[in-house]
Length: 380
Image (cartoon, rainbow, N blue to C red):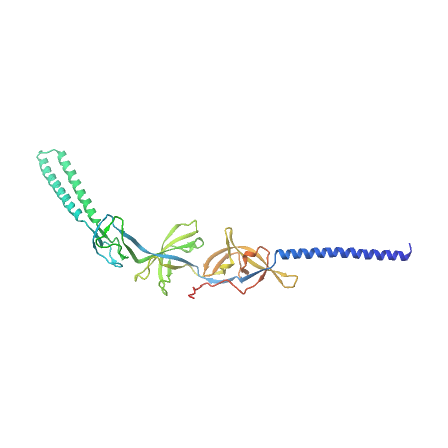
């Protein structure tokens, strides 16, 4: 083989090797780009809003919506039927305990009472006469015993008749304010028919519920503040009087009752009101907007934004990490985080439904959820 032929063979081998290497590199480059394209299309960056967890001074407070009711209330009705012969009240009148309100016709019962009283008097006279006869052995002991039984029976009939007559008068069972009259003079009132409502408006009571996470903040005797739109601009003092000894299994809330003095009668039953209870000293809490926390059956979670360095385009690459948290009290639009988030960490506040662990994100904070500790209702 001549030197020229050897050189040509070596040159051809080099060219062939370069071509094979180029093909292999191109295949690798193509596969890499395809894989990157698939990954990019499978999990593109999601647009989210974020907020920085901050530590703030927070007074432990329970705020709940409750319903006011009278401390005593009753729908008055007749025990027995009869014709209305007298009405001793007006609608909306204040009455005292034991005050007569309505009288039904009792004339036949009174006449029968006179007959029963006469029979009882006769039975008493017979007993006295026979007791005198017994002393001289003119009658037997059995006769006297029968006379005593007859007298007791007659007296029982008199007492029963008087009780029946008393039922013909409807009395106020307690002091309070009457509602609208539902009966008229001359009307026949059936047994159990409604006559009027009676409410004791001072003090009032308010029932509200407390989430199980705030149960430790509520105690009997605690002071509370009550506000209602029915009496704007005023705050009423209250005190917790009773706590239900069990949590509602459907809502996981605890029912609480407080008593509210109402000497001027401005609060009325059925009105909704806001109750605030404050306990202990203010403390430092890490807070987040309520919208940042996702509540699930297996626990509460948030997404923490992480900086994963720079991407292929040279810009910072942000991803998220899902983390379980322990939530505490709420205050307006804020929630206290007891465990799981440190002050200064960036947390996703919007767009969580599109995320999972490791998802790339793009921050867009043009729209932010409310983070007001004391939001006000707009009248517009």
